[in-house]
Image (cartoon, rainbow, N blue to C red; front, side, top):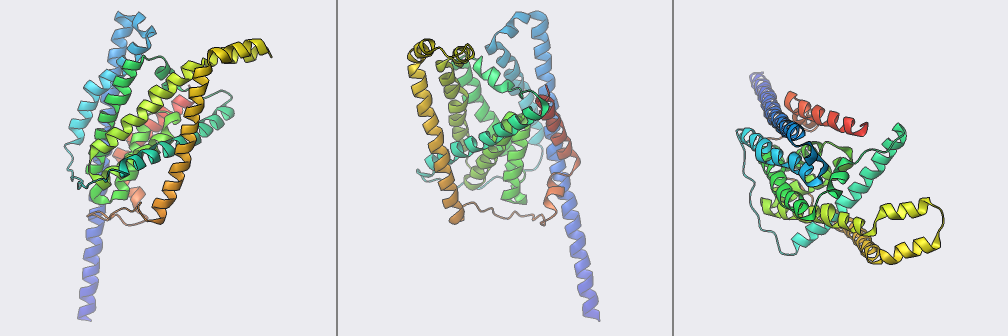
Length: 350
């Protein structure tokens, strides 16, 4: 009887300790979410103030795509993001162990990066198209509009250099370092989710979640942020600079104009001859996309069979069935999610 009473007391103490641990864990994630909420507000305020000043003092500047992007990007990277970083760095972190990456693993990761992103982008495009059909008008893709109106040097500066460095530091290092003690899987999914939501539009959400999670997986396995920064930069160059310039080379507006005027073989032949190089390059790019998708599917299957996509348990284990409620269903994270989901919904019906 005495031993049974001791065992019962021990079980009660263990249960109490587990409950306290879950409470502390929920508070930790809530604090992380709250810091990102404050950082989001800071970014929005700085961007709004700068945009207002430009509208009042130099409204003609807003007719220039380079200036519009600059007015949006610089306040975020020079003012808002530093505030967010300072806030998040106040939360205790655990450095991810650094491990060597073999020379051939980087190109393999690059192929998977492109293939997964293209597949996810296709899914996102289908989803936005479906929503557009339901609401009776196409979903506006403001990101594409901005990207096509920016000069190449500025696109390279902001999208290929600044964005990968800042976003990988904020959404990979800051988040993963502060959540990896609860398990690599938790870190990877949360990093991808917060990164995707931060984009604030459905056009980018799906592939941003897939890419963000993949980059977080690489970071937890290598501990080297330069690897994800490099992959992010390569992807942004191909997606935000190269592919857009290829589209411009074929002059789709003229092509659609010719088709809308009815069948005119002479006009169509003249157009094709004038834009032959652009269409040839577009065909090569299309072949590249197909190859990346097929190769990534094969590599994914191989990695799954060889059990490469495994996640180490953390120092603090969140019980199954309690992970979502602990990581997401807390005040800080809920507010962060609600803010960005609202932004996505507004974008859909703008």
